[in-house]
Amino acid sequence: MTRIADMGARALAELDACIAAISEDETNALVELLATSKRVCLYGCGREGLMMRALCMRLYHLGLDVHMVADMTAPPVGPGDLLLVSSGPGHTSTVLAILNEARKAGAKTACFTAERGSQVTKLSDFTLVIPAQTMAHDQSSPTSFLPMGSLYEGTQFVFYEILIMLMKERLGETAESMRARHTNLE
Image (cartoon, rainbow, N blue to C red):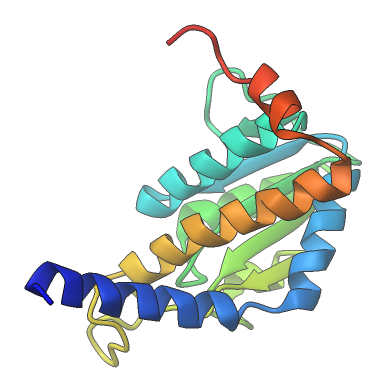
């Protein structure tokens, strides 16, 4: 096996272990929360934000009214709406501020994090734990050979695709109905 293949196998094994450790009950509850929310706004910082953008796009393809916080077209949130954030370390200051604003407006709040019991979870009505190394522990007690928060972010991407498949089933969507919502401006 080549060095690249060995490293790939190691990364995939770490991703697989993280995916396997995500709670089925939390996942099913999130599917229902997303399916029953009037509008969903998503937010994450840095690479986590990129993964949240990928999730936002797929939720849009499923027909949900979804938006990224801070985009110029992001609407206000209120009762019946959901703010879904990601903060792997559980204490990102911008995420905390946005959660507080959504709560004041009467929206439900939910988070993805690796740190159960963190500040972000205390401001969230719902938490889904992604059990992976983040930058919170990459120096003091690293568990992954991937750098910094890469294991968390990679697990996000794979888990979000699984989440979309569960949502597709829950909403009765098809590959064709999703494709019909894909942009034609490429």
